Image (tube, rainbow, N blue to C red; front, side, top):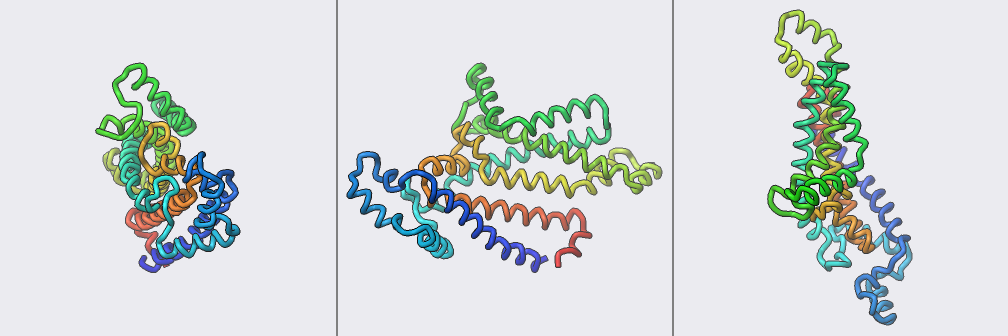
Length: 308
């Protein structure tokens, strides 16, 4: 297991290099002048030229990228063009808000998706199954930003009972958490149903029923436990996506997380912040995937033998 974890962490390095190169290339060729953004529209040409030289913006693409890699290896991703704060100080100040929202969103999706998927599988082709799968498909297909706007229009504009955006007490979490949770719940419900249908047709399930085991024990103790692997995968991927900052949802609800920070940084061509955010999101997603793989071995002990 330890060798497997070390191997996975080692493979993270080329992934980060590849991601950083792609993002740096996109930001480099994106129109916009960072010096102009920093000094403002009224800055003189002389001041702009001096700042470009000081920041190394006149250097070639490969010189700038090499300098970025050398500094990044030392843990220095620079300072934000906008706030002049150290990049990772800014990221870590925003990450708790994203973590809270992601945790609530995933919890909501699990509490809805798994029970719905289990019941739909045990009552296949029933009215409940058909109805919930239609809603699950709608939840998966519906764009988050559109759903968020509709919720704001209904509960904030028309009814006036919930805040339309911002960060505060528990009421501020409701609309963005529902927006994220319902979409993820649809994916989890569909995967749970599919996985359960495959498991409940197995011989050992029929044997358990023939031995007189209570149906609820057959479903939740035998079937669900053996159907968890793909469900855990979906839940983990959804959690990794949300931890990376649900970009559009955070933007719609003015949520002060890393997703909104990424959007604002791209608009302002804040290259150091965009680079830092993308690397941070890539590391976070990779760690979540690693945790999922480790969790597999506790759900199904047979998987431990593959970690070599």
